[in-house]
Image (tube, rainbow, N blue to C red):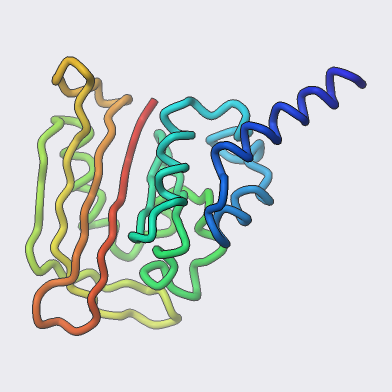
Length: 186
C-alpha cells in the first residue's frame, strides 16, 4: 500500500512538472488515462516527450505533437481552431492517421519522406480539405517538414526520427492560421 501511494505521489509530481499550466489541454491531459494508450502512463514518458509536451502546452502558438510509431497526438489550446469542434477532445492521444484521415494522402507521404530519409520537404499554398466542423473546409497552408538532428548533427534512425511541420496560412486566403507539428520518436 505504501509503494502504491508513493508511486501515485511520484506520478503526480511528474505530471505537475510536465503539464504545469497548459490551460484546458493541460487539464485534459492530466485527466486522461494514458495507460490505455500507446504512450503509456505519463510517469513512464521519456524526458524528450515530457520536454516537448511542456513546450507545447506553454506556447501560445498552435502546436500539435505527433509522437511515436502511431504518431499519437498531443496538442495545445491554440491548436483547437485548427482541429475543429468535431475532433476535439477525442483527438487527444489518438493516432494521427485516424484523426487526419482526410488529409493523410498529403501529410502521410511528407512524414514518411522525413522519417525514412531525413529530408526536409515543403509545400506552398497547399490546399488541405479539413473535416473539422462537420463539413469539408478548403484550407490553404504553407507546409514545411524537417527532421531534427542528433547532437552529432546526423539524422536519427527512422524509428527515432523527430520532425517538425510548420504550417502557415497561404497569402490572400482569408483567416491566418499558424501551426507546428512535431513528430519525435524516442
